[in-house]
Length: 115
Length: 114
Image (cartoon, rainbow over all chains, first blue to last red; front, side, top):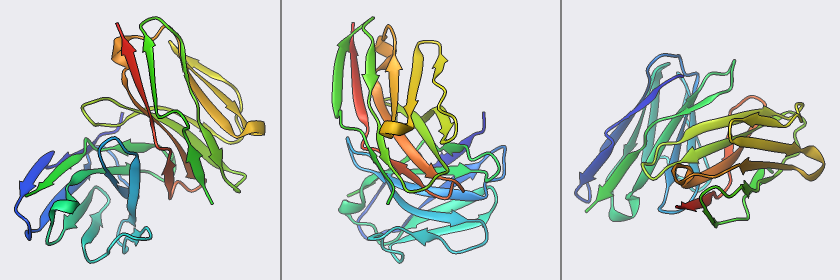
């Protein structure tokens, strides 16, 4: 099946630094990519939806300036957590879909720990 | 508004028991898709099934089976003869027809004990 790869799988950073997480579709062109946040023992919370070449659509309550999303190509989307703080510590998961099939493929997730 | 409800937070069974995970959804769309995903302790999400709103046929795949009933807006998932490896969190999800948004339930944690 299709593969979506996320990098890094785990990152630890100091408070105040910015962290970039990459999401790549390895063997297909992803017209749409989604970014989710998952707190321990909780469900996935959709943060934003991005279509290649256009600005991301953020869900209510998600700070656009805090979580910068760039979907520069059909195979790459990035999420940058700017000026990270301990409350940003979470598991971030990306997923990608192709409009013609609608299947949703998930990355392995990236664990962010902010000290 | 779209909504997916998984009322069972956590279920524990003994190996070889059958277990059903419930999923109830709300949508005003006539065309939509329903999904089940498995999230093992390692964290990655594993796709299990997709069903569109016009296909109410039940599906069986090995020990897994799904019961889709539009009349009750439910899409339940049954594991027959459960195994320890089935232990995971299972998410039910709903997407709009254009797949632009996916709405997830809160997940059901399944513990299968030997």
